[in-house]
Amino acid sequence: MNILEIKNLSLQMGGKKILNDLSMDIWQGHVHAIVGVNGAGKSTLANTIIGLSGYRDFAGDILFKGNSIKGKGIDERAKMGITLAWQEPARFEGLKVGDFILASAKDKSAETVK
View (cartoon, rainbow, N blue to C red):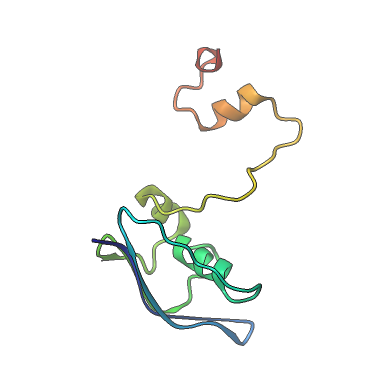
């Protein structure tokens, strides 16, 4: 089953075509890799899929579990489970580990981090 389908995706930035009629299927339960030289469009594709601001005005379509996500913002896509895993974890200088954990915890009490 396709979990993600890219259909004829094209994106221009600064008058330059970065993605040109790209189509691909990502299958559920499989590992996929996108490789290429610097400037090939890998990060642009990832930013377009997650719906990052500045990457939403594209031609073609992106389907997640069979439904178009075109027009959905980054927050809506994240709620669906579409996000990026960064190579380098985020760093917050001066932030204590407990405060970092509490930032994303549902239960904001001090008991959460004990």
